Image (tube, rainbow, N blue to C red; front, side, top):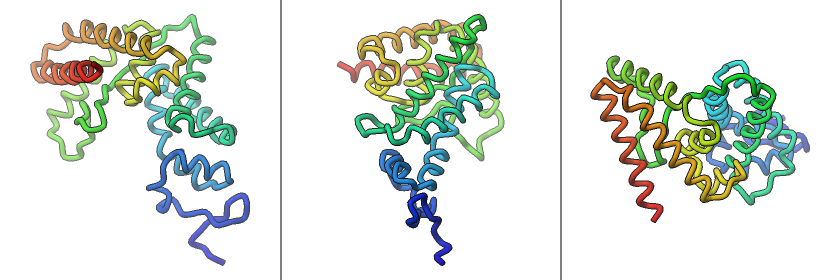
Length: 232
Protein backbone atom coordinates (compact mmCIF):
# COMPACT_ATOMS: atom_id res chain seq x y z
CA UNK A 1 0.00 0.00 0.00
CA UNK A 2 1.32 3.44 -0.94
CA UNK A 3 1.15 5.51 2.25
CA UNK A 4 2.49 8.66 0.61
CA UNK A 5 -0.87 9.41 -0.98
CA UNK A 6 -4.45 9.42 0.25
CA UNK A 7 -7.24 7.74 -1.63
CA UNK A 8 -9.88 10.03 -3.10
CA UNK A 9 -13.59 9.34 -3.23
CA UNK A 10 -13.25 7.65 -6.60
CA UNK A 11 -10.58 5.26 -5.40
CA UNK A 12 -7.60 6.92 -7.08
CA UNK A 13 -4.56 8.53 -5.47
CA UNK A 14 -4.79 12.12 -4.25
CA UNK A 15 -1.64 14.28 -4.18
CA UNK A 16 -0.35 15.36 -0.81
CA UNK A 17 -0.97 18.99 0.10
CA UNK A 18 2.62 19.97 -0.68
CA UNK A 19 1.97 18.88 -4.26
CA UNK A 20 -1.13 21.08 -4.47
CA UNK A 21 0.35 24.39 -3.42
CA UNK A 22 1.29 25.51 -6.91
CA UNK A 23 -2.04 24.55 -8.46
CA UNK A 24 -4.48 27.31 -9.39
CA UNK A 25 -7.66 27.71 -7.32
CA UNK A 26 -9.72 27.07 -10.45
CA UNK A 27 -7.97 23.76 -11.06
CA UNK A 28 -8.28 22.75 -7.42
CA UNK A 29 -12.07 23.18 -7.45
CA UNK A 30 -12.20 20.96 -10.55
CA UNK A 31 -10.28 18.36 -8.54
CA UNK A 32 -12.86 18.75 -5.76
CA UNK A 33 -15.58 18.09 -8.34
CA UNK A 34 -13.72 14.87 -9.17
CA UNK A 35 -13.69 13.80 -5.52
CA UNK A 36 -10.23 14.86 -4.34
CA UNK A 37 -10.68 15.77 -0.68
CA UNK A 38 -7.13 17.07 -0.29
CA UNK A 39 -7.82 19.64 -3.00
CA UNK A 40 -10.68 20.99 -0.90
CA UNK A 41 -8.43 21.01 2.18
CA UNK A 42 -5.96 23.16 0.22
CA UNK A 43 -8.72 25.61 -0.77
CA UNK A 44 -9.82 25.83 2.86
CA UNK A 45 -6.25 26.57 3.90
CA UNK A 46 -6.04 29.34 1.30
CA UNK A 47 -9.39 30.98 1.95
CA UNK A 48 -10.49 30.39 5.53
CA UNK A 49 -8.39 33.23 6.94
CA UNK A 50 -9.32 35.65 4.17
CA UNK A 51 -13.01 34.87 4.50
CA UNK A 52 -12.99 35.18 8.27
CA UNK A 53 -11.19 38.52 8.10
CA UNK A 54 -13.56 39.85 5.43
CA UNK A 55 -16.70 38.73 7.26
CA UNK A 56 -15.45 39.90 10.66
CA UNK A 57 -14.88 43.40 9.29
CA UNK A 58 -18.55 43.49 8.37
CA UNK A 59 -20.31 41.78 11.26
CA UNK A 60 -17.92 42.79 14.09
CA UNK A 61 -18.67 39.53 15.90
CA UNK A 62 -15.98 36.81 15.94
CA UNK A 63 -18.41 34.01 16.72
CA UNK A 64 -20.77 35.02 13.92
CA UNK A 65 -17.85 35.55 11.56
CA UNK A 66 -16.59 32.03 12.31
CA UNK A 67 -20.08 30.62 11.77
CA UNK A 68 -20.50 32.38 8.41
CA UNK A 69 -17.00 31.41 7.33
CA UNK A 70 -17.74 27.77 8.02
CA UNK A 71 -21.08 28.02 6.23
CA UNK A 72 -19.39 29.61 3.22
CA UNK A 73 -16.85 26.79 3.00
CA UNK A 74 -19.55 24.15 3.46
CA UNK A 75 -21.48 25.68 0.57
CA UNK A 76 -18.37 25.72 -1.56
CA UNK A 77 -17.99 21.98 -0.95
CA UNK A 78 -21.66 21.11 -1.41
CA UNK A 79 -22.05 23.21 -4.56
CA UNK A 80 -18.60 22.56 -6.03
CA UNK A 81 -20.18 20.90 -9.07
CA UNK A 82 -21.91 24.18 -9.96
CA UNK A 83 -18.66 26.09 -10.37
CA UNK A 84 -17.66 26.91 -13.93
CA UNK A 85 -14.59 28.90 -14.86
CA UNK A 86 -16.53 31.86 -16.21
CA UNK A 87 -15.30 33.76 -13.15
CA UNK A 88 -12.30 33.47 -10.87
CA UNK A 89 -12.75 31.05 -8.00
CA UNK A 90 -12.14 33.88 -5.51
CA UNK A 91 -15.03 35.84 -7.05
CA UNK A 92 -17.34 32.86 -6.65
CA UNK A 93 -16.30 32.33 -3.04
CA UNK A 94 -16.73 35.97 -2.04
CA UNK A 95 -20.12 36.07 -3.78
CA UNK A 96 -21.27 33.20 -1.55
CA UNK A 97 -19.85 34.91 1.56
CA UNK A 98 -21.36 38.29 0.68
CA UNK A 99 -24.80 36.80 0.12
CA UNK A 100 -24.65 34.97 3.44
CA UNK A 101 -23.64 38.16 5.25
CA UNK A 102 -26.41 40.15 3.55
CA UNK A 103 -28.98 37.55 4.55
CA UNK A 104 -27.74 37.54 8.14
CA UNK A 105 -27.79 41.32 8.27
CA UNK A 106 -31.37 41.38 7.03
CA UNK A 107 -32.27 39.04 9.88
CA UNK A 108 -30.52 41.38 12.31
CA UNK A 109 -31.57 44.61 10.61
CA UNK A 110 -32.48 46.31 13.88
CA UNK A 111 -28.89 46.07 15.05
CA UNK A 112 -26.13 48.40 13.79
CA UNK A 113 -23.76 47.03 11.16
CA UNK A 114 -20.26 47.82 12.35
CA UNK A 115 -17.16 46.99 10.37
CA UNK A 116 -13.46 47.62 10.49
CA UNK A 117 -10.82 47.97 7.83
CA UNK A 118 -7.14 47.40 7.46
CA UNK A 119 -6.52 48.79 3.95
CA UNK A 120 -4.63 46.52 1.59
CA UNK A 121 -2.71 47.73 -1.47
CA UNK A 122 -2.35 46.40 -4.95
CA UNK A 123 -0.39 43.19 -5.42
CA UNK A 124 2.87 45.04 -6.13
CA UNK A 125 2.58 47.53 -3.29
CA UNK A 126 3.68 47.37 0.33
CA UNK A 127 0.77 46.78 2.73
CA UNK A 128 -0.15 49.39 5.31
CA UNK A 129 0.16 46.77 8.02
CA UNK A 130 2.60 44.14 6.73
CA UNK A 131 3.50 41.16 8.90
CA UNK A 132 6.95 41.73 10.37
CA UNK A 133 8.30 39.42 13.01
CA UNK A 134 11.26 41.73 13.71
CA UNK A 135 9.46 45.07 13.59
CA UNK A 136 10.31 47.81 16.05
CA UNK A 137 7.79 47.74 18.98
CA UNK A 138 6.99 51.42 18.48
CA UNK A 139 6.11 50.73 14.84
CA UNK A 140 3.82 47.91 15.92
CA UNK A 141 2.03 50.24 18.33
CA UNK A 142 1.62 52.82 15.57
CA UNK A 143 0.15 50.23 13.22
CA UNK A 144 -2.28 49.11 15.91
CA UNK A 145 -3.24 52.71 16.55
CA UNK A 146 -3.82 53.29 12.85
CA UNK A 147 -5.87 50.09 12.60
CA UNK A 148 -8.11 51.24 15.47
CA UNK A 149 -8.65 54.63 13.84
CA UNK A 150 -9.37 53.00 10.50
CA UNK A 151 -11.90 50.71 12.16
CA UNK A 152 -13.69 53.66 13.73
CA UNK A 153 -13.72 55.69 10.52
CA UNK A 154 -14.88 52.80 8.34
CA UNK A 155 -17.75 51.96 10.65
CA UNK A 156 -19.23 55.36 9.77
CA UNK A 157 -19.27 54.78 6.02
CA UNK A 158 -22.86 54.18 4.81
CA UNK A 159 -23.61 50.49 4.40
CA UNK A 160 -24.20 50.41 0.64
CA UNK A 161 -20.69 51.77 -0.03
CA UNK A 162 -19.00 49.53 2.50
CA UNK A 163 -19.03 46.13 0.79
CA UNK A 164 -17.47 47.26 -2.50
CA UNK A 165 -15.00 49.37 -0.51
CA UNK A 166 -13.91 46.39 1.59
CA UNK A 167 -13.75 44.06 -1.39
CA UNK A 168 -11.48 46.51 -3.16
CA UNK A 169 -9.28 47.86 -0.37
CA UNK A 170 -9.06 44.78 1.84
CA UNK A 171 -9.49 41.78 -0.44
CA UNK A 172 -8.06 43.48 -3.52
CA UNK A 173 -10.69 42.24 -5.94
CA UNK A 174 -10.78 43.94 -9.33
CA UNK A 175 -13.66 46.23 -10.22
CA UNK A 176 -15.00 43.56 -12.58
CA UNK A 177 -14.87 40.93 -9.83
CA UNK A 178 -16.66 43.26 -7.41
CA UNK A 179 -19.30 43.80 -10.09
CA UNK A 180 -19.86 40.05 -10.21
CA UNK A 181 -19.93 39.69 -6.42
CA UNK A 182 -22.34 42.56 -5.77
CA UNK A 183 -24.45 42.47 -8.91
CA UNK A 184 -23.92 46.21 -9.37
CA UNK A 185 -23.12 47.90 -12.65
CA UNK A 186 -19.42 48.56 -13.20
CA UNK A 187 -19.91 52.31 -13.09
CA UNK A 188 -21.81 52.00 -9.83
CA UNK A 189 -19.01 49.91 -8.33
CA UNK A 190 -16.44 52.57 -9.21
CA UNK A 191 -18.67 55.37 -7.97
CA UNK A 192 -19.39 53.72 -4.63
CA UNK A 193 -15.75 52.89 -4.00
CA UNK A 194 -14.70 56.45 -4.79
CA UNK A 195 -17.40 57.88 -2.54
CA UNK A 196 -16.38 55.50 0.25
CA UNK A 197 -12.74 56.51 -0.15
CA UNK A 198 -13.63 60.20 0.02
CA UNK A 199 -15.81 59.65 3.06
CA UNK A 200 -13.11 57.57 4.72
CA UNK A 201 -10.50 60.28 4.24
CA UNK A 202 -12.85 62.97 5.56
CA UNK A 203 -13.53 60.90 8.67
CA UNK A 204 -10.04 59.76 9.52
CA UNK A 205 -7.98 62.89 8.91
CA UNK A 206 -9.27 64.76 12.00
CA UNK A 207 -8.44 61.69 14.09
CA UNK A 208 -4.78 61.60 13.07
CA UNK A 209 -2.71 63.55 15.56
CA UNK A 210 0.37 61.37 15.14
CA UNK A 211 2.55 62.69 12.30
CA UNK A 212 3.69 59.20 11.33
CA UNK A 213 0.11 58.02 10.97
CA UNK A 214 -0.75 61.08 8.90
CA UNK A 215 2.13 60.31 6.55
CA UNK A 216 0.87 56.74 6.27
CA UNK A 217 -2.57 58.00 5.28
CA UNK A 218 -1.00 60.27 2.68
CA UNK A 219 0.64 57.20 1.15
CA UNK A 220 -2.77 55.52 0.97
CA UNK A 221 -4.22 58.61 -0.71
CA UNK A 222 -1.37 58.70 -3.21
CA UNK A 223 -2.05 55.09 -4.19
CA UNK A 224 -5.76 55.84 -4.64
CA UNK A 225 -4.97 58.89 -6.79
CA UNK A 226 -2.56 56.85 -8.92
CA UNK A 227 -5.19 54.16 -9.42
CA UNK A 228 -7.73 56.81 -10.44
CA UNK A 229 -5.29 58.23 -13.01
CA UNK A 230 -4.71 54.74 -14.43
CA UNK A 231 -8.44 54.36 -15.04
CA UNK A 232 -8.30 57.01 -17.75
